[in-house]
Amino acid sequence: MEPAAVVILNYNGVHFLEQFLPSVVSYSQGHRIVVADNASTDSSVAFLKEHYPSIEVFVFTENYGFAEGYNQALDRIDNTYSILLNSDAEVTPNWIEPVLKLMEQDASIAACQPKVRAYHQKNYFEYAGAAGGYIDALAYPFCRGRILNITEEDMGQYDSVVPIFWATGACFFVRTEVYKSLGGLDRSFFAHMEEIDLCWRMHRAGYQLYCQPASLVYHVGGGTMPVSNPRKTYLNFRNSTVMLYKNEPVIQLLWKLPAKLGLDLLAALVFFGQRKPHDAWAVLRAIRGFFENISKWKRISGKQVISGNRHPSLQMAGALVFARYVLKKKYFQNLAFAQQVNSTKPDYGFSEGDTGSSSKKQYQDTKE
Image (cartoon, rainbow, N blue to C red; front, side, top):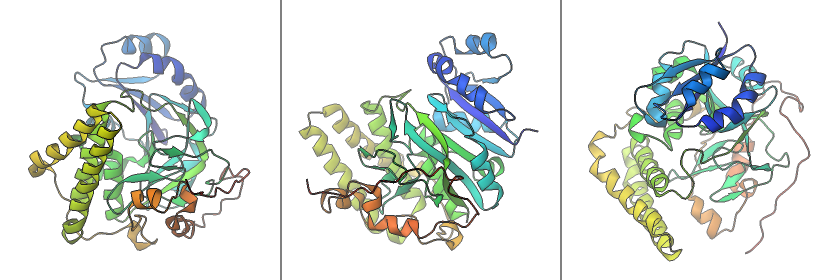
């Protein structure tokens, strides 16, 4: 059996399949390739049958969304590792082996991600993942290489293998057995934040997650839902609140939930001020949607454990918006939290070449 299954979820994305499948086929030799089709109405399935008859195709009769779509697909996967790969991602030579080598060295590593750059701006990190994800005290996500809406140029400054809080759903390496044992992605999320929620549950179960920057993937981003789409705004704000509610202990929720909702209301006001009323209303609907469905969000019981206590907390203690707009921190490596992350580099025997190190540039924040 092939060690890994590359699983691509597709919905009306025949143009992405035409563009990006060649790289996947060329650089995934020795591994299984599967396309799970979410009831597409375009020519995706016909295209695959004609041009890629060797690729397995799971054809669903309904659009399950991102979360449940992958759950349905991985239910049919029995390879040791599954790689959840977005259809709008271009892979590069040797993108699989460095990650599997890392995961093979420690059975407690449940999931990993590669370094992710933007397809249309290839020297810059991509928004959704960059060089590994983290969250702040209120569950706002950020990355090595991206704080809020600022993405950094990749100059090798994040080429070290480090533990992360969450791995991007754009290219998500996971032990198939762990994925299934934890219930997979939460289908109620439909899309957005569902991989962060799963990673949080992995940490609570005592597993570790890492970024292996020796593997490089380029991601278009917004392939199925543009960044400015109010539906995307709604899901991001609602699901981040749901994630906080599900995973934080009650004693922490007493202050974190009101603080999170207060910042969301502030975000709605900012959208109104920017003349983006559709996004503003999406945030308000997200808050309402959280409370209207609060009975169906299943809280995770049990003691809060982060990476089996192997590392200091990978959740930033403060608020990201404070660091960005009050302390004027634009780059990840200028956060005090970054020093905490850098102190946890593992000793898995990787040389500089194994981690893809290149020239490094120090970014200094300046007053705006």
